[in-house]
Amino acid sequence: MEKRSLSQPIENNDQKDPVATTIFVGFPLTADLAYDLSKSSKWKEARIVSASNPGEVQEIVFQDKKYVGRYIQKDRTTISELELEGKAVRARLKEFLETPSVDNLHYVAIAQLMLF
Image (cartoon, rainbow, N blue to C red; front, side, top):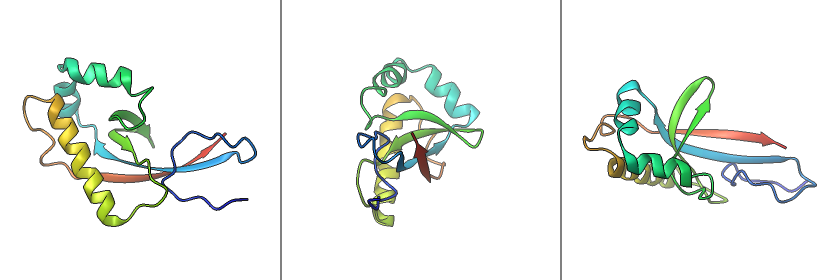
């Protein structure tokens, strides 16, 4: 079995290996943030596009909590790259919001193992 990095995209084109790993970088979806995003037509468009564009910000559920962010599309990731990705997600979210409600949030990195 080939070794895989923790940041590979979800798509599993290799049907011989039923396992894929990935890292999601984003922010907890607080009630205030969810309310602000729900008023944004740009956010609603991005949610539709995120299905076909894995680099777009999206909403996920992990361990019964909602997060908004995106999956890293690299094979290997350093801590400094995680920080840059957190800043990029924050900047993208600000494009959807009238008020900067993400300035006080701390990003999270979630490693996930996908079984197909």
